[in-house]
Length: 327
Image (cartoon, rainbow, N blue to C red):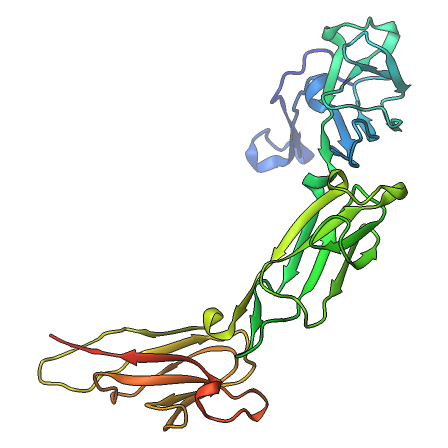
């Protein structure tokens, strides 16, 4: 054991001195660097959860404190100040769970009371500040897809609602108002798929019904507005470049056609009319490079051919006229 002369960074060398070997670097087997830490830097003091989830209308919650204080033989945890109300005590490591009385900003002090050290700031090893998180701030409520794609002539569609409300035990999803028609109910997390009845602007209310909470705005966790858009409104159909730069002596150019048609699972690209020459085919998204045959004003038609749909105007998702720019 050393005396009390160690400093931060003190280095020990383990030397091979067999057969009178010299004390130099060639005989060093291992080195050991000593690092010194204060009681505070060596201490771990954590709170889980923090922030603490609380339900609607609640102002207090519960959490668990854990500590490791290797320089102490005994610790105490006090509230609000080093000498405030005692919450817990124990050895140099442990944990303790509060009741439902922790409010926003509650401060816990981890005090070293080894050998009857006084409850002063000089003996504070660490402190923690508790925070609360409201049920609304912790809740997520989403729809997929949103917007809902509508095929030509349709005004209603289908979507899936998904929620996570960790500060609750039971929820209900209502339509149009907190107490409107019931769509779905379940635990703190879940999902449910609508029928083909969702119109543009439909509003869903996620209600906390834990412990018999009434269906009113005070118990609304989140609202979700779902939009429904026509296939053409959701479809992207572009050319790059457009216009196509060509020399003054050229009347033909080349470009890349890009499409995104979420309402369709299968598409075809035709030239000059819905049933004109086929240029490309694929899924709902994709791109295709033309040859050097595009003339000024060539029109591409993006056709929805899902389920063998006919090549006519009713299946046209978008039209794209492409121009040439002579330089």
